[in-house]
Image 1 (cartoon, rainbow, N blue to C red):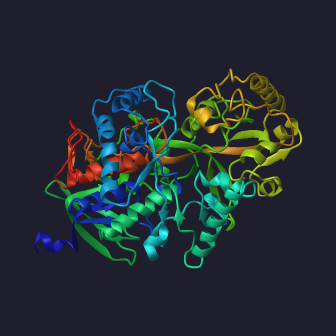
Image 2 (cartoon, helix red, strand yellow):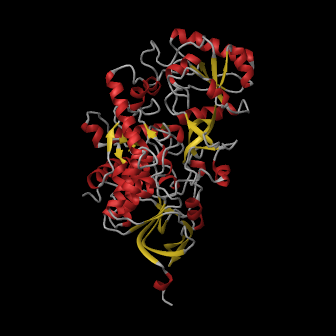
Image 3 (cartoon, rainbow, N blue to C red):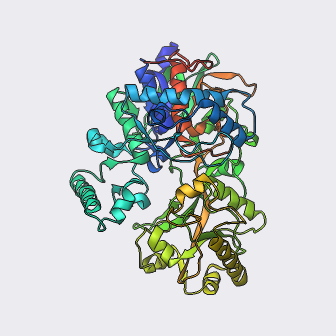
Length: 578
């Protein structure tokens, strides 16, 4: 029997995983004339991207420059060097900075994947080379009706992010919806959104006006459909196949139980989203105690990393930081009785009149830090106070004004949230401390010291309100510090928050073209990795909004170009230009 007869199907590039990196790789491969085949283990595409803000961190992008926001590759490189604190020996960070803007332009010119400048959106650390504006891009809103029946193939956001059980609202929509009765303009705007949503529900399971990460997922999938890229849903990869020392294909198991041997003439791309729900890899790569909760898509079970390791790939956790990109989360109870998690990204922690305390009743971090840095503060505190969770402490009036986690702004009755076990209220700080089981005197002393500093407008302990990011997410009407206001008028509120990851960062070692590296540092022929299966170039740090999606699209682009025989030149950044 000939070698060819061993294959049930042949393609040029076999892409495993229908998230941001996988869809971007397959799309660019198709645009470059290859025949890609995309394999997705669930019945929907999008992965964790679909539930995210969808922002991409692309320094030096053309869209922001055209909008008047200046930025340079050199400044971004200085910032990354200062933040990461390790030299870019492999040149992979430099390749990212050179190629990111090119990848975004390529996708805009040749597909429906389009972004708009986020404007002011500060980098997460005030360090040399950091930018206040211009590096963050947001996906353009997408009309899901353009997908027809395929709209149901887009993974929806988490229920906690949906209005009326199925309507998406972007950051710019929220204040207009909340204040819909305060002006005619807001009322008309909100009315149009509600009417559109009600009309959608006559034909679809949710609203088709999609924004943020859901819009990016829909735009990628719509573009794949335009290019007639085949997608095998509910299909898993059992093993990779070698021929002559190179990865030549894979053995697949389809949803109807068939086994397919697929030959991939240009290689196999691992892009399964990381190991968020793989208990063994979590224990191996994450800090102790290993966090129980995850914001990652439940199908991210480390399949790709384990495939890569089985073929001789390597990971280097000692140089990749704490294994994940973090966010504090609160635990919700959903209508169907299941448990959900609400990520506390930017809407509440930076606002004036909120502090976070550990189990000793003491503050431990600048509450307005990035979500990643907040959780790193939780772990640093845990070394001294060995119990979790932490608690966010505020007044009931704070919740009415700003919201708190899954309790939205404007909420006056906290009873339902308390009865559901989501938060705790008490008339006094002493009673609140007893209810959340922290030392009464410690909590009272912590709040008293915070209040003294809030009245002065300066957080001498943790610097809340000192950085561009802090002030950006605070309340500009609160002066002199948009992040500080005393906590003194009961009833008081406490909300438990736990560490969780939004994405994993430890992954397969690759070169700048996404080729998986063996233990000796040489590329494994025919094997690529991208997205969260690829070791993060950030090395455990979190520079700004879109830290995972920016590299996912950029290296997906580089992988596809390399597989197509048109690798992006590392010296000039040119390659594959339309």
